[in-house]
Amino acid sequence: MLVECPKCSRRHEVARSDGDATVACPCGEGLKVLAWLSYRRIFSDRGRMACPSCGREYDLSKFRVDTQVACGCGSLILVKSGPAAPKARGRRKTDQSERLHDVELHGLVDTARLIHSATHDLDKLLAMVIRIAGETLDAEGATIALRDKEGGLVFRFVVTEGHAAKLKSLRLAKGEGIVGECVAKRVALIVNSPREDARFSRKADDESGFLTRSILCVPLTVEDACIGALELVNKKSAAGFTRHDLALAEAVADQIAVAIQNALLSQEALKAERLAAIGEAVAGVAHCIKNMLNGLNGGMYLLKSSIKKSGADVPDRSIGMVDRNLELLKGLVMDMLTYAKDRQPEYEERDFNELVQSVVDLMLAKAAERGLALRYMPEAGLGKAEFDGQGVYRCVLNLVGNALDACEGREAAEVEVRTRRADDDAVAVEVADQGCGMDEATRKSLFRAFFSTKGSKGTGLGLSVTQKIIREHGGKIEVDSAVGQGTTFTITLPRRRPAPANVTRKG
View 1 (cartoon, rainbow, N blue to C red):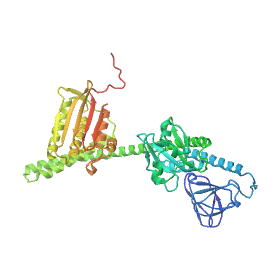
View 2 (cartoon, helix red, strand yellow):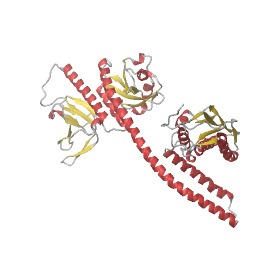
View 3 (cartoon, rainbow, N blue to C red):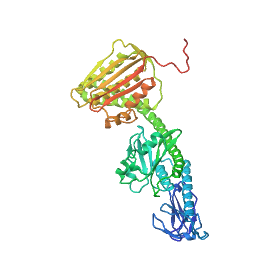
View 4 (cartoon, rainbow, N blue to C red):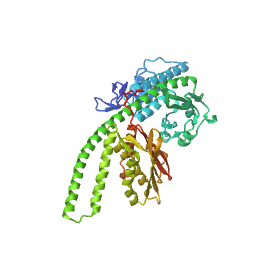
């Protein structure tokens, strides 16, 4: 493609590229060349024209037919007439057909390029995708709607001027609207009179002030999974969308779906690499801090012994403050080490009720300080089970501590700890509080690393580590909560350790 210097009119031929670049003109002017896929294509058969985006004047009669002129503002002018072009009379319909085929061909080529491009930024990719789709199908608007975890649709981008920011936050429930039916049934739909269609949702129009006159909707499918839909709005011709548009949209949508999937996979791979690097760094730092803590604990022991021998009057409160913070720091370091490293439980046979009792006994003082009742109700005769005593102890301790924190500030609130048989081969412990409870959004994020509702008081690792330890045992942790009504966590553990994978039992 060509770039024309606005200062000296010198032309420079530049190669298409996936990134922005600058061409230095001999006159001293720096010419900006954008990434190939970011250009907005404009077909022109006039001798002179002004760029519709920046107003710069171009004498297109000096360019050969099919020359591509890249304007620095982001418009790509495709010259459809020139000095060598014969004057055509009475062929307006044919010329229009040829122009249409050029647009469609360029659209298909550009979407194919997206699949192999180095663009891993999903927002940037979607912005390019819908611009190409809108131009290719001659529509006023083009929207990408992607499925969320609940099966509903989130509108990511729209090309209509002035409405992108509003529709970016729009969400439709599962099966809602014409686009919802398109995704739910995985079927392409043409609706040229949407306001007369019972399936039509007015949310988008109400949010943006846009008036929808026609809709073409195509599902985005990858490996037999529907990830969303491409929606074209308002065909510029009065006849509305046609079967030809549908076939073209399906071809474009197939490529768009692959491009989106590639971007998502790249993001997940990059996130996994970052988490792995963070995990290694966290494990190294935690190990160093653990060694320092051993020294601090030894120093505290010597300090206490010296104070006791000297008979010095040192307030117990100050010593207790140091001890508590050392314990908190020790717990944080152990959580970091446990979360960052894969480990196998160190199984031992222990009385399950006794282990839970030891946790409750430890937390009674904390409950009393806050004016809360902490009750333990074990099931009699529960017997012994095989588990990692230290790991399960930390899990129960974390749940009881969280329950007491959730009840803070609530008068006459109670925390109950119950053990029971889950079945013949499993035991369970329940920690129920009458605290503030949790909403749905909090429950969904509960076991995510570094998520915390305690602000600076929480590390966000406690429940992640608890879940990890329980899963390493082959058990499960469940939560039942309602805002203002309290929360119940249930840990279920197999009574016996799982048999090694390479061992075949005889019998």
